[in-house]
Length: 411
Image 1 (cartoon, rainbow, N blue to C red):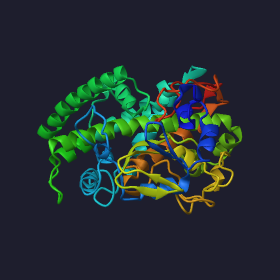
Image 2 (cartoon, rainbow, N blue to C red; image 1 turned 180 degrees about the vertical axis):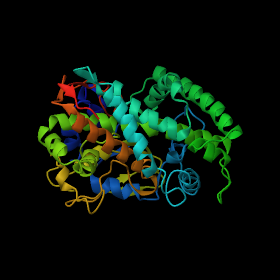
Image 3 (cartoon, helix red, strand yellow; image 1 turned 90 degrees about the vertical axis):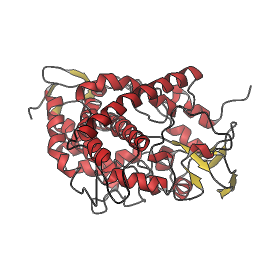
Image 4 (spheres, rainbow, N blue to C red; image 1 turned 120 degrees about the horizontal axis):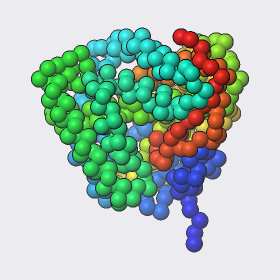
């Protein structure tokens, strides 16, 4: 029996706690064809090149043999220009520059208040699960406020979101895919009702704005509004949960950096950038298709083939960054935000036209969350290392992260 490929080993759950040695092995062949006909791209230069190549599509219906989908509505991350550009502009009008430049920065005080309240609840305890008691409730509260989703509905849609994320898992079984289909349908029904509520009585939230906007690009159709709402709700908290949890784990594994952050709170900006490179919340992007034969790294990617871009591997490519397996926030220059002294921008938020829509908010959430944890937890330490990981290899992060501490410093 043939041994599994390197990428198959990466997908194996037993390697979830530390896939990085396998990524180093994967990079020996920058573009590798898999048994199912897909191509895995693992080196920084080639990933960056393909993310800017118009011959790479994000619409999986362009596959030579399209898979049967579980959702008829496509968010803009699964569309190509010009449809992608129009839909992204419609969403961005109410989230960031140039039309709503102060939306994210204006949330800082509220974000800090949510974090303060969550850490206050640690008082009287000596151990908490960072995932359940902090890294999940914080961003889910934020995205609910931003979109106009009732916070009390979180238990209702959380199970649907968790099931829907399994659609990203290349190893999902037919039974899991059926569960995904039902979860997506249930979430769609819930959001359809919520959108109609906001259309009838608009508030100061994104769903209301998108449902009633008549800007230069016209109004979103019902399907477009539904797909965008799903994307923002799911991506708006799931990836940030991983970012905050991975950040806590990384800081506790690097007590020298934690101590430096306690002494110099402004380090948090550089620290989060290095964290995004070192332990990104999204490890690879599996939903790309070659529209034409593409010659790259001595390999021909055949037209109609699936292309999997392993962002986490590219972030640790030694041809891109010096000493890539070292966690070093000081490699980032605060005068060139998001850029390192010794490398170009990391791939944690992707690149090109599909650069992460919510990157400014994710950065701010992680900076506030990790900065306050470092400041207020006295003598924090891991109760288990490695912790148990979520099953999904795409959105890689701990399922639980028990952390012990002596006490909580008052706010």
